[in-house]
Image (cartoon, rainbow over all chains, first blue to last red; front, side):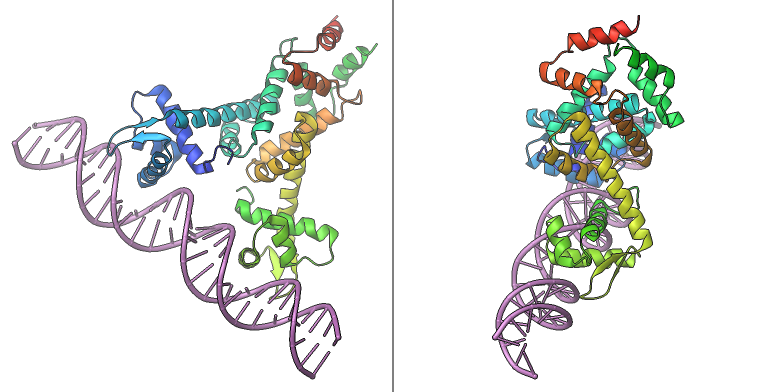
Length: 160
Length: 160
DNA sequence: AGTAAAAGTTAGGCTAGTCTAACAAAAGTC
DNA sequence: GACTTTTGTTAGACTAGCCTAACTTTTACT
């Protein structure tokens, strides 16, 4: 993986970061619930992350990210968000499905791809005409298998 | 994974399918080279795929996909191609990097996402004006951090 | 045909990550 | 303060996938 961590460890870091946003203390049980793994798996993972200097965790205590751990976690969170927006807002994939897919994909995109995707999402969604014509056009195309002729005509007109 | 196979097994199936396109016989050594793993790993994988009814492989012989194996392999190949085109032709990611990324991502996209992405790529790249204005606009935006005012002006004009 | 090289297999070991079962510590309650 | 529940840990087993080393089969060459 790009961060030097496995997909699984990235998931743990991400979970810790996200839980930390809404709770004062991050605990093994919460991580376990969020990731759908058993507590011994969390224990083992924290051990490893602790060895790698990415989390602070004394026995039976709560969990905190180190600076380095936070850096990686935020990177993963960022990937997730960009992928989620791309899938749900641009492709129009169901939000639940987008979440699940983003959770998987986030581990595998190179940084150069994520950089470009980030800008692409921004570019499309901040279209100066407001609700992007492009996305309307795509929705129509996806649903009907062909372009909305009216939209196309308007577009071609613009060419003079 | 969506196909019922692991990422690794999907890679083997894909490799067998792609090698089959250019050679009369697919052999362990070729698979091994293509995937960058040692031959015993290929042997083990073929064993498993054979048990699952996805390949035909008698000892010391060559490898063939069953109908079901071919179905899965083609699915993976399709994902790869769509992702590759999206990354390289739409996002403008370096082609080498796009290949590598597509190889990873191909295992994780849900079928509903891939369906929409497929259409999206088609929609963007078959823009009726020829070389899509959108991609020019994005390239400019990516390189300069802001929109090409001239293009935007032309776009807004169209609104009347 | 006989031997050397190449191709493929088997055996066994390693890592990463998961699980269950059993135990230990902390927190909550009477 | 003792007992119970919740939380967390340790130990040990399992799967998937990779590797190296040693062996076997096939192929190629003389």
